[in-house]
Image (cartoon, rainbow, N blue to C red):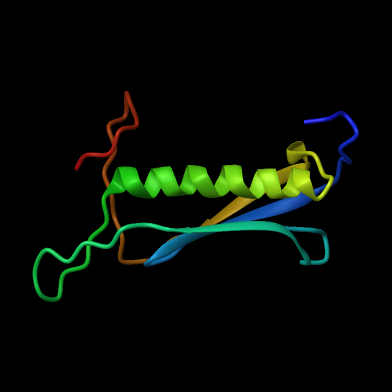
Length: 106
């Protein structure tokens, strides 16, 4: 992006919900400066079961981070203005990852 982008100090929140993920960027008084949300596929292999594929979750997180960063730049702010990120995910979720490649164990 252009060097005319302003530099600020913002906090990002990554919210991984049951059906979608969103990334919201806040200013110092909790105003939303930029955001992006994307849904991901739901799988119901058996009655009462609800599953997600780990790689699809990762892909949506990356999409949301990129989308919100682009929205921030469209608003005139440099993406380097994001100084920290907090995460939220469902408490009943677990995934396993390969430590060498960071690929999910599916």
